[in-house]
Image (tube, rainbow, N blue to C red):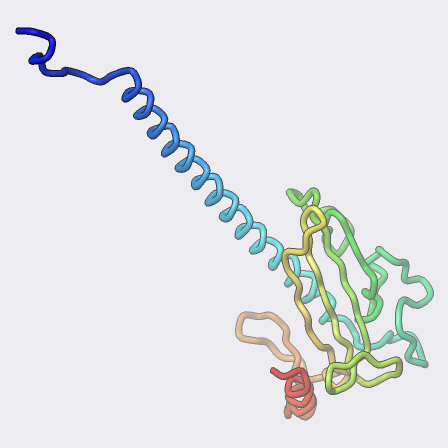
Length: 199
């Protein structure tokens, strides 16, 4: 048997090297795909947490009086004794205008554990029935709560608080939570506002 008739057995070094490179490329691709999926899951979890933080603060703001109960004249913003950043002193919706906190805190001022690097901001503006910002009293205030992590906004909630809701009848929603209804029960002003916003 000579060299020409011998069958080749096994791989050459070049074929082995090419096989190793192909397997390595597939592993790198699989690992990077897993990394992208992990980042996407982490971002989705952060968005859910941000929405929860936004809902909590929005609920707090909307429970407040439409205007300062101690003022005879409606003034927009914090009154005497209501310091910026001191939520326990806020008693009406527009006291929250410009409020920001990092990390997010409970209403009493204690930081919420596990939210280092997070922040919340509230902006309040008088708006007309079409949603346009107004410099005069309109009976409507738009409240915007923005939650961010590392300076990147993750959730923004917008609500409109009406003076017509102030002093509405209180009752419970079946779970023992107090709720309020408009005095006239029509919701007409809200429908007009939503129509003006294109909703």
